[in-house]
Image (cartoon, rainbow, N blue to C red; front, side, top):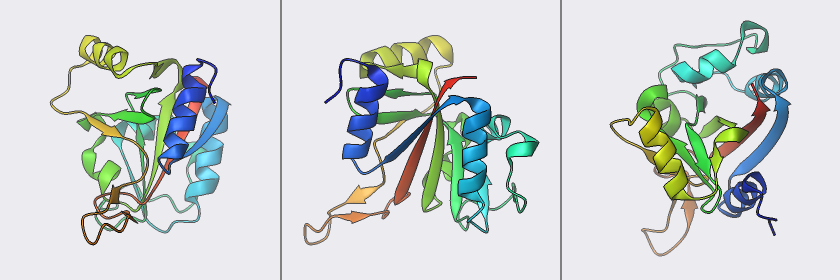
Length: 169
């Protein structure tokens, strides 16, 4: 159980929903981990904001930036923030919705300072920052039980979502 710490609560709730969480002290450490993780995939789709987080040294040798998200094996993006109480990532269209929704695996950078205790806090911060045309709250991998009440992951989006929490930039 979390101790009132937003990062711990987010991690607990996100993992409960089927997501994965890894945490790093610095952006450089996070980028190196993402490099190793993405090296196993042949095609990648990376959002504009996430590209800024992956410096040239952190990119896999076979980096493919221009892969169409509809055929990419993995996507990477940057969340605006996260909501601890629901275990949700706050996703905006600024990093490209297709990279967030189409690849079966989605790696998401999250700044620890932008993990909000409540949805209300997160929405106020969003309103004060950029007020996008749309906002997505992603709480782990895509899940559906539409047919026969059988839970299936990855039907309407990624079947695997990894939050990469970065303590400082």
